[in-house]
Image (cartoon, rainbow, N blue to C red; front, side):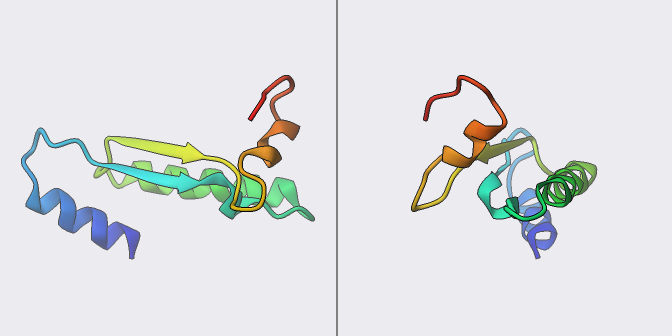
Length: 80
């Protein structure tokens, strides 16, 4: 579905119009199988890039209950 949306957006905007997608990295966090979730997230990002429809990806972290806190495990010294 995301690809269909990106295709239609790209088709309906000028060539120099910048198109981006915002992903929430917390959507890919499986606290029981972090490696599997990381691989799934990376695969998803690579798929999106391979479409050639998107100019940039913004990847945010956290969720409503704890915005950004999960990423602190992966980046020592990061403060959210």
